[in-house]
Amino acid sequence: MSIENQPLLRVADLAVEYATPGRGAPVRAVTGVSLTVRPGEFVSVVGESGSGKSTTVHAALRLLPDSATVRARALELGGEEISGWGDRRLSTLRGPFAGFVPQDPGTSLNPVKRVGAQVAEAIRLHRRVSAAEARRIALAKLELAGLREPEQVFPRYQHELSGGMKQRVLIAIALANDPKLLVADEPTSALDVTVQKQILDHLAVLRTELGLGVLLVTHDLGVAAERSDRLIVMQRGRVVEEGPVRDILAAPREEYTRALISAAPAAHRGRLRPEGGAAERGPALAGHRDGRTGVTPALDGRAAELGLPAADRTPLAKTGVVEHGSRPLLEASSLGKVFGAVRAVDEVALSVRAGSTHALVGESGAGKSTVARIVVGHGTADSGELRFDGAPVPITGRAGLARRRPRDLRREIQFVHQNPFGSLDPGYTVERIVAEPLRAFGIERDRRRRRERVAELLDAVALTPEQHLHRRPAELSGGQRQRVALARALAAGPRLLVLDEAVSALDVSVQAQILRLLVELQAAQGLTYLFITHDLGVVRLIADDVSVMRAGRVVESGTVARVFEQPEQEYTRTLLAAVPGERAVPIAV
Image 1 (cartoon, rainbow, N blue to C red):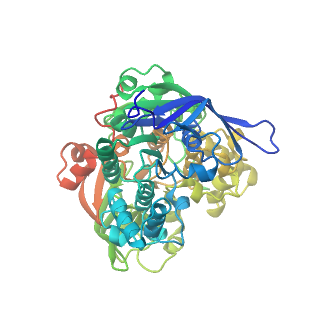
Image 2 (cartoon, rainbow, N blue to C red; image 1 turned 90 degrees about the vertical axis):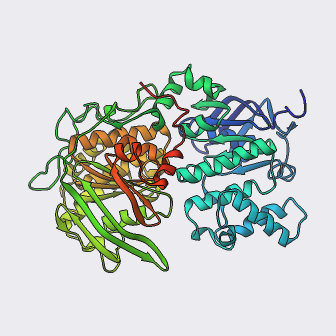
């Protein structure tokens, strides 16, 4: 084998176990995994949460905690067997030879050190250069990672950057020493599609010019399909399918792989429609109100039909056109909000039809979440008007506005956060979390009846009450936590749900479950959604109408069909062109 074709990374028969003190035998996380990455090759590892993807790449770079036991027939970087190496010797390869991009920038960057200094530190750790030269190189790496004004970013702290900007700083650190191999664990999951495209385009240039090899862990099959040479599909700690990406997408051998491909938003055209499970069975949670309590009955039974509990089920509903009324439930006009010298929201107007889903899309910093917070009363506006079902809603004034809204209005507009783990009290059980709105609004005063209502709510979001009532958030998967957040929001019997990036961090299969669930609940209950997202692939699946925001302003608005097929603005066309997997993922039939 020639040196040029020698693998940058070679893993053979990898097995990883985690010790569980006080809980008996260790837990096997990875079994018999083998993979290679050659110069200039782009390899993606895909699979659901818990499939062993991240454990595999962390083991390949010897980054696992002491609680992990790693065994492998081969664990090689640049042809060197590193199984027995200590940290000092490993540092000669980590950074200069293999750059690593971790998943969470919030925990990976030093909060008390300027981000530019952290990039420069990574350079000086491996190169004998002056501080001035390290700064020059750091600025170039920040720009290479997609930061347009590196001079302004260099002196900032991480709390002064958006999530996408922080992720790009981590990529700059990984590229700081011109590595031959880049190992990236979900590096673009928090990024807008346009920024994601910029970064992946940069990596493509580096592959061509420098022969950079890339090992990418991602739950975004669209990204993997569009960018990879080879695809490795993992399930429950094992590789279930591997090969050239075109071969796997065209003719997947495994049912699990077919389910992942079918779950990808790029595999579907048109809006999802309910399959009839919830809509045909009756009124559900918010379709009508109990005159005494304001609560509504839950979806009756067969909760599994609302989700995708097994990997071998077809994950998405059929697509088609869903008709809605023209009466607006929520209307906003001339909304304005200024933070310091930044006009975050500028003359924003929205009209959200009752029973429909209205998507609000745009890049980070466009003002989407600020509008969402004004709508739910978690933030105030400096100007403008908001009407709900024809009645004016107070939006200006001091903070704490939501608490001063009429009680019925607070019940009828509920919020689902982007990060369910951060929004759920870690010390509460699922039962207490979901029951909180019932207590807060005085909906169910009887403890036994309140517990029954919580069980009905969990059943409605396809969580088995017997298995989940007494768990805490840390004991749930990301998809389960998002379902709990939905159950809590539905507990008050709302008419409008405001969902802020509610599926952006989920695996494609879990994302498909939640989208399917939202469609079914909407059909059964007549719910209205204001759906905040940067993912236009998801918009096409779930939304009827869309408003595109840029720099605080709505630049285009209309039905999803019109905006996607005949966009009027160049910015909208840029967003649509950046959606990953549109040409690579085969259309599901």
